[in-house]
Length: 287
Image (cartoon, rainbow, N blue to C red; front, side, top):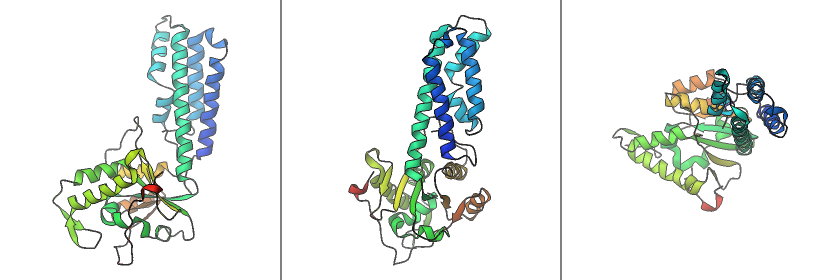
C-alpha cells in the first residue's frame, strides 16, 4: 500500500500510477530500451519519480521506483561496468509489479472507504465499548448527522496494544461502567475482533448495512511510528483521500486535540447506557 501526500485525491494518485505503469509496459515492449539501456532506464526512473513525487510520500517512491534493483543498475553504471539489458529489464519488471500492487491496493481502499464516515478507533474505545459498536450513534457523535455509511477502522497497532494488555493488572471502567481488570477487557475485546476478522476476513458487516468494521492491516513495507497514538493518527490521515470524512474516536483528551489540529474530526464515545444493545458477530455478515 502506498502513502499519499496530504490533500491528494485517490483518483489523482491512481491516474499518475497508471500512467507510470503504462510507460514501463511501453518501454518493455520496444527496442529503444536496449540502446543505452542503463542511461535510458535511469533517466526514466528519475522522470517517473518527478511525476509521482507530487502525489506520493518519499517512502512510497523508494518502494516503487528506487528499489534494490534500481540501486544495482545505478552502481554498475557509475563504475562503467557492463550492466546488460537483463538487469535493466529485471528492474523495470520489478517496478511494474510493485506499481500494479499499489494500484490494486488503492482500488481496494476505495471499495472499503468510499462515500463513508471513517471512524478510526483508539484502544480505549474498544476496551470499553467492544460489545456495543452497532448501537453507538457514530454520525451524531461526529456532528455530521443524516444517513451515511459508517466504517469503523481498527489499526493493527490497536490490536497489538490489546494483546499487550492481556497481562495488565490495572483496572479501568468496563462496558457496564464498573471497574474491571484491563486484561479481562482486552481478552474479551480481542475475542470480539477474532469473531469479526478470523479466517482471513478484513471486514465485518453488521446487520445494519450502513455499518462495517474494517481491519487496517500494515503492509510488509510499512514503517511504524514510534508512539502508538501517532501511528493511529497517521493511519487516520491515510484514509482522508478515500472517505467523505475521517474521525478519531478516543477517550484521551490530548489525542482528540492532536487529531483536531491535524484537521480530523475527533470525539469521545459516551459511557454505556442500558439502552445500548450488545452487538455480536454474525458469520454470514463477514466479508
